[in-house]
Image (cartoon, rainbow, N blue to C red; front, side, top):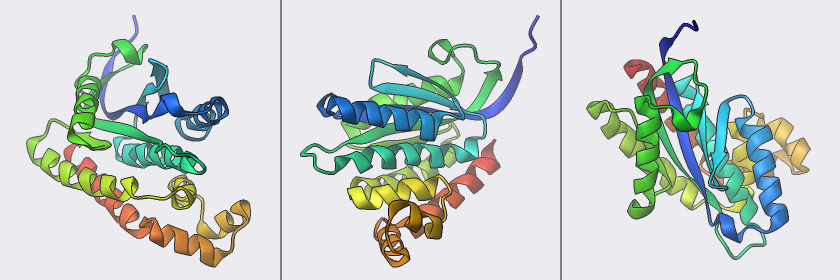
Length: 212
């Protein structure tokens, strides 16, 4: 008999905004990058074609992962009349391992994440963080609203840079890989409000460690 154990984790549920307007090549490229550059180190499942769920065993890292997904989608907006993005809900709490199928998992974070995603479109938002802890959720709501306002105004060029920074690529290395000067990378990072994003991610990590 397999042993089961409860652990603190995060569940990310997301759907691609305006996915039906992606050109076939854009769709292939976006899904490939989502899988191989962002979700590959985590247990994940896609469903309904343009939606996905991911299990993150280190909940303090879940916001970074969710934002990396969003920045990647936003980077596809160049030469398009549509606005591509990913609507994302993060839920934090106890999960029983092992998880054989994300789609049938019934632990609280799976339920909370899915339910919150359903309300985001009505609220005109694209990011939410919930935990079931009433006090923590007040802080998470303020935090997610602020970050969401940053990402909804992010340009394609800024998103290109922010996506790589979220993956831990130093700005100096990024300048070489993108064929841009270090000053240009710095300007795009600042315009994309990377210092604020970094601070908010640190605040998120500190809060998560207090409640799990």
